[in-house]
Length: 254
Image 1 (cartoon, rainbow, N blue to C red):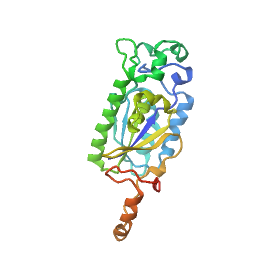
Image 2: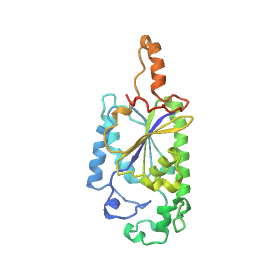
Image 3: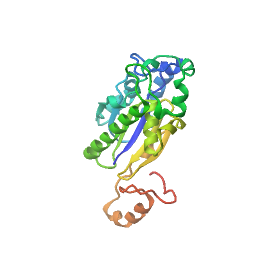
Image 4: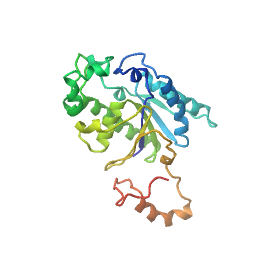
């Protein structure tokens, strides 16, 4: 199964002003967020993305723009397929949407969101539970894992651009953590978290990484003459398709 790069959108004007953007329309990246997005192609240089899946919200589409422009301008001009999946959109915060964080911190629901998020339901007709948000996002990723594997093989890498709470919930699922512990995970704007999915278990490869990710490139297949003699060493050094973990930690990326 594939490796998924979970990209949080770049810093937005709502992040800077301390407001909970949610699904508010017209929320764009601020100056720093635009710079973060502009640096993204270099950070992912050499990583062969099979596909990009994104939240429908503008700040995610804006974050991806430089990456897509670089792909189109590359030597082969091959565009990376892009799909929009509403299941990977921001949590529906209901009546909390657009309000200041410092104001929300005084709301009786705030400590529930912090300490017992699996019990939290945001107020209002379109308010969502954090459980529902996690469930829809996990289902989306599982669906895309199957599709990408079918189309590109089990060593494929694809990117999902989404939001902070969504990524935290996805990483909690990958780690086998209860949702009530997901607030322990930090995901900065334009950071990338990488999860390698296998039939048995996910492997967390990166969490909140803001640097280069070239070492996540799958190694090329060895020449036929070397394949037989290296097979045993590779089997011992890396998790295989069964999802077994490497006792002792393994040799790391290529």
